Image 1 (tube, rainbow, N blue to C red):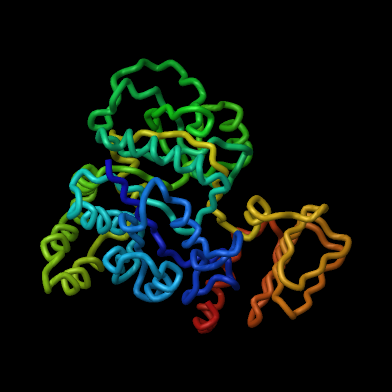
Image 2 (tube, rainbow, N blue to C red; image 1 turned 90 degrees about the horizontal axis):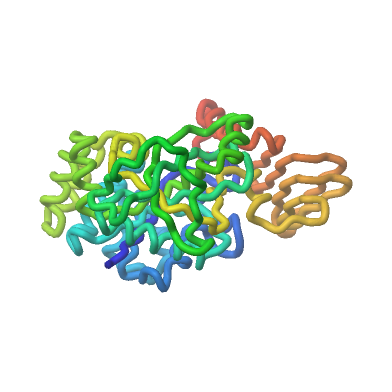
Length: 380
């Protein structure tokens, strides 16, 4: 089996303003550790997958930055989307290129801006998902919840797949409540059917999901064969399938760049989740427990970065007195003092400052919207 990781490096990262800007969005920042999130995503793949089989997809504004961060990535493995059209066209474009190398090659679609605390356990879960996908299933990695999280989507675990998944369809199993799924990192993956995807819940619902044991966080990591996902796109998103066929006919010819520039903007702007996953009967899940976070806001940094004795995350020349559970990100050589406050996010980017309560971290994008309304695009 050949595994082809595809790292999705688009996205604007507006919830990390003022650090994240259009020219240098979240995935290009070193928010966890010393390396940018994109570089960390690629670095955790070997030895499961080598760099020559790894693809990165991004927009034209970020292609040069991706090259700087990943100088050893083969030239043809950087796929540049002419414009942002959400994840379904991104997946389709990557699948076309992988299919040219191996029609039954297995793609692993990986967001560039996630954090994994236990890379070996992640690779174990990813390898298990790839084995299931090789039989024709569309597989997602589900993450065992550790708390009643309201910022993630969930999936409800169905019955166990009965033997090889074939075309990803499960044999009838009745309506008995499934036992809690066994994470891959805990001694072996158990592939199961996805009964349903559910949106981000309120806290009471999230607590119920945690107690139930039959729900997993939806990591947004999907694994499937190139031919399988292209067939599903043609079936569920025929308009997208039509544009992908135009692109495919030109790949490897002098018309390739023009065909991509003309067809890609005509692709429907829809996520792979809504466009394919929620309409397909091939969906399976491999549970994992590998210290995953989508690093979705400044507040999430408290999960993935070191804290002081009072639960504060501090960076740069920042100082905190008589405060707890804060995230304070300063700059080297620029003192920043926070005194007598709790549960705040304070970020100094040099040319802009953010101050907000931790429980309002998801609202940071409102500042970006307001700057655009004021005609301050250069600050976004």
